[in-house]
Image 1 (tube, protein in one colour):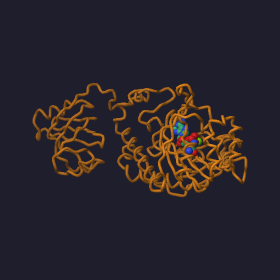
Image 2 (cartoon, rainbow, N blue to C red):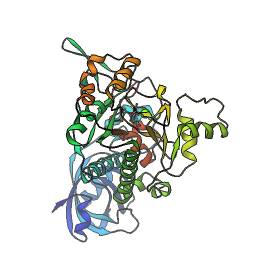
Image 3 (spheres, rainbow, N blue to C red):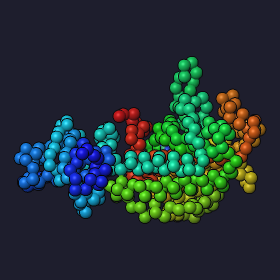
Length: 430
Ligand code: 4AD
Ligand code: MG
């Protein structure tokens, strides 16, 4: 019977064969412990000298790290392992030997590991990070499908800049100029006028020369957009969505969180509603905390965000930023026209902004004025203006950065470990 490490629990006390790789081993004169992985999980295989042929025992002692194998044996309960079971190995068939595998159980430097990212992905922690990333994606589709959102895919090659022109990746589009998408938002606004509630999930690109633990050049964003939805209603959707994702990861990724030694105390507290603080109050709060460098009208940096986040156990919305530090499309705040109806959601534990969102300007002449003020080329936004020409409605939306969310939930320090093949300032390989 062929099975997998994950499915093996259905075969307790039965003999099965599993295709696997050897990650590590320990042996003495009488017994060998093989650490096996097969993509679905990590399991120990026990080879007892007296129970197998001399050849099999010798092979167990000689197999090298990352050699691929078929192992056959009985699945038995083992209370000491996280998995709850192990294999009493009877026979081993080598598929392909691996010699001098570069990533050994000793410590390696980050640059070395990043150069070997294609192999590093096999290690237990990196495997757990990708599993949690996958669960976030699964829970995202679940949440938006259950709430009557339609998935719409915006283009990657675009002619305009939604988030300001300084961070665009330029490319030629035959004889025209084109840019890799920074955000699908403007197209999602068009889609919301056709489908009401929509969401996208795709790669976005920022030619940002930032070398921080939160910035990638290429990252994946989930961008919901909702017609007939004001800013407050959008915040409610955002907190419900984030809480759903956190609860799904806690429920479905227990072994992965354990593999990462993630302390889940704070994650377990994540229930709605999330606290909200206005930008104005945040500036006052920071001044009280001794940040002399912050003035009203300036954007917050990572230390400011972390100070605000540390004040709460939950993710926190910072609302109503100054108009002049936000993109052109945000709806003015009727209570203070120097600010806009927007919010950034700051994750706890120093993981920074995971969502940026706002209500969108729905008045044609105001939007035209803003495009003008931001010195954008009105012609390339003509389709976007059409949305205000033909049955404009109040609408709001937001973008959640997948990798920053993975970093927060897994507890990894740097976003480079949250993407299978991260594109960084100085890294296009592998
Ligand atoms: O705040 P941002 O730039 O917002 C937008 O792009 C809006 N158009 C979204 C919308 O309203 N539809 O980006 C949204 C999120 C950030 O909160 C962050 O989580 C992530 O995208 N993000 C990055 N993640 C990794 N590396 C980068 N360089 C990122 N830039 C933004
Ligand atoms: Mg932002």
